[in-house]
Picture 1 (tube, rainbow, N blue to C red):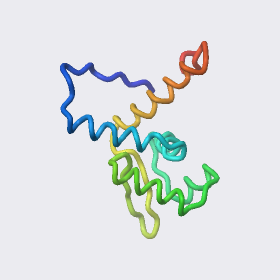
Picture 2: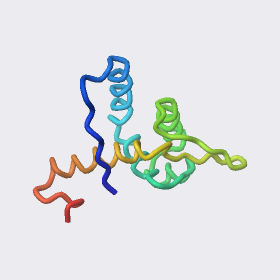
Picture 3: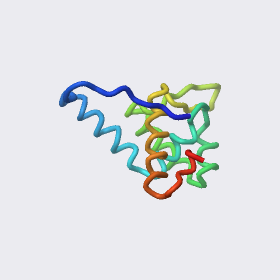
Length: 114
């Protein structure tokens, strides 16, 4: 799915830019970006994420805590299991656009255009 942002008018406020920089810092980690990509349209437990990424559960938990603090994931408890997902379509769009832009950098014919 491809999302297109509506162009903004004028210069963003300093506070908005500060938060945007914080969001981009959170995305500037391979594990966190992979987690967000996996959560598009679904919820997953820490265990499922750790297994899919072949990473230790405690490390994944730390990344999820940072993403949650930054508002990039939400958590839902079901008994003793916590499931993580994306809070809104903006996170999905951000991740999709970053990955699609990467394809443009790497390939003459990006896979998402085929």
